[in-house]
Amino acid sequence: MNPTDFLPSAISTDAFIMLMVAGSTFLTLLAVWNGLLARDPMRGRVKNLIAQRDAMKQGLTAPRRRNNNSIQAMGFMRSVTSKLNLLRSKQTEEIEFKLSQAGWRGKDALVVYLFFKVCLPVILGAAAAAVLYLTKIYDGPAMMRITLTMTAIVAGVFAPEIYVRNAISKRRKAIQKGLPDALDLLVICTEAGLGLDAALNRVSGEIAPNSPELADELTLTALELGFLPERKKALENLNARTDLAAIRGVVNTLVQTEKYGTPLASSLRVLGAEFRGERMLRAEAKRGERMSTAEKKAAALPATLTVPMILFILPTLFIVLLGPAGINALDALKGMN
Image: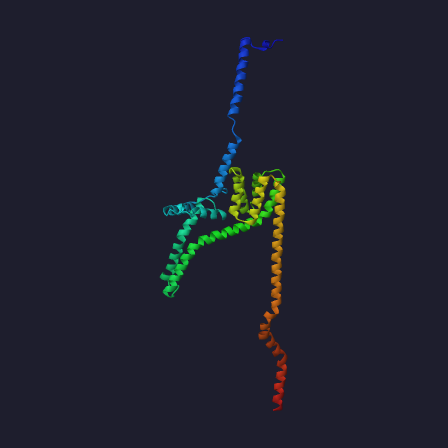
């Protein structure tokens, strides 16, 4: 049976061959075209990393809705700092780095800090002067009023720095507290076959409810590991932002693992065991200190109770014991008289 027998009578054999050749050519060109225009998967990943990094730097990982009052207040602060050229000062980078250590990233945090750094001394000084000079709350000498006003101004100067320093200290304590659990989860993720970037992302998601500070740092580190040309730089940035001895040990372990190709899971397991042992030693030391303090207080208790005993207990005891005998003696003397 000839295949041309199935063709309609209006289509000849040569026309059918030409149609087959044209269709094959079209499909071949379409396949080549799709192959040439195939999208690079790394391009989309890089764009995603850039967007996430910018969001982290601007503090937009958890979107917040701002009302009109906060927007207007931020605009006012930004206008004041721009008029005073505070954003162009030489200490801007150092201040921004300290704010990042406290967990405040982005230009808005820098604007708020600089605004209060400049305006808070004026506000506190004006409020102190108004209270001391325009009211009758304090009627002291003029020199004391000037001293109190200057004290309020100095307090306004140092209050933002003290606040940021306390925030950094609290953040470091929170990171230190959640680090052992994060290392255990990181060991589990690496043993399951995840890379360092994916493991950090997974661990940050797991510990976010209990330790959001450490989760924030791990998320930013994972983004920088996928974005920066040198992975060592991302780990060094983590060490610089936290400035903790425990994080420094983790960073050194990860850098050595990246450099020499040692197993990541075993290194992290040893490091986690060391951290857990140090935490147990600190707990035992604190318990020993509490016990020694209690023993010292118990040893000093008799000496402490001596004075109240002499002043209050012994006179009452003497009155109770010797009172009846004294009364009987007085009655006997009266009877003899």
